[in-house]
Image: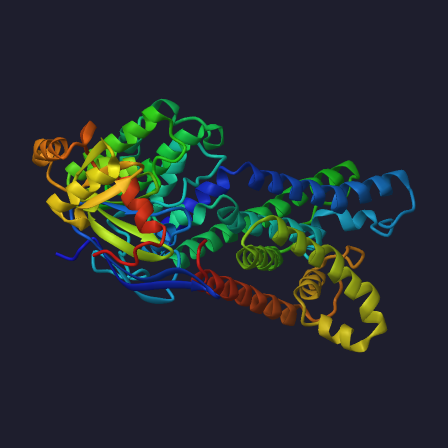
Length: 301
Length: 273
């Protein structure tokens, strides 16, 4: 079966500005893939190229094997790109009915998707009167009209309140569990961490990392607050080697399995070091993200 | 394209601005073609339209009277309609919404043009209908005989009016695509239709032979010539027999094709941002 998304050597340049550079990315069937990057990294440009809204300068994109412009390229694809956009003089329901006509799905899907995003009660109101969160939910409803096999969502929780964000994540998880492949772009790490199977991190138009969230976060570290810290560090280095010991904010961070905690404590106490704190510290995705997107790393496979 | 056309028809029919333009077109045509001249006739006053005698307002003049506004002011209204139908997608950012539902750009564009063609036919037909009703009322009030143009003349007039109106609407669509919006295309389109065309005809053409010659190739003067050939009076702004009616119809059709093709090419090639 052809992968839902296959991107090879994709680049987009606007004059001297490179928005996306030599990007390779594959989204596998059934996974929820997080496309992570700071604002302006090239996420939306990539998604627009995937949907045929922007032509690549070079490289190829395929959706279920079809290139943009080929018949049926978007037959099984639903998308919400860079915020919702609808006709302000129509109601939410009429907007969806109209789009269902473009999609050729028939109007029977309209009440279904309105219910999915919990907008049935306000579906008769004019779109212009919707709150930002309602507009966003209508955007997701429109993306679901075709009952898509691939759902592309660009920052889907933008404008939603905390409850709305939680609902949206639950909906995406439900869709993913139901077999729908989801490509989700976000700059919200918690969001990606909670719902994505794999993530690709993009920075300055380049993919700088691609792996599962767990792999990206790496192994957990032991954080040790001890006095004197220099002596503690030298004891730890003697035990585990230089590359596993870091001094961060006056404390030790040891890249060792958590079950070594008691051994670490004993060794430090034996060496006359006063240990005041010893705990497992899971590496935050935010740390990884900032490290990857700050230009420190050029490529992580 | 069929599905896109249906969707575009719904959008136009549910858009208050489209109805406003239709009403405005009727109102302008009614006022300037019938009511002001009739008031002038009834009051016996002298004015710019005082040569419009009563016979000019009767049903047998329906074709020319219904076409007289299309070279300039009714043309401006259908140009605005063309800009709104296409430019709104840029203004609201809805191109991406509708294109990600599946239709190709050209299918969506084709649907828009077909819907615009239906809208211009409705506008032109309603101009004929309003004109017919008004001229019958004037004839009965003035105890004049009611004689209608032949069916062939009516059909020719309706077709010519539709051609002119669709050409202007296609220009509006092209401007909206080229300038990716609503405000600037409407502004520039109106400047061309209401100011530049007039200045060329009234000021530049009498002074410079080459401008007078070049005018014969422009859309406005050809629209004016076609309207004049079918009976529109020469005292209506923009109506003048600069070229023959047949030639004018061909030139307008050529512009229609060119505007449609240029708009399609631009929409197909450019990125939707």
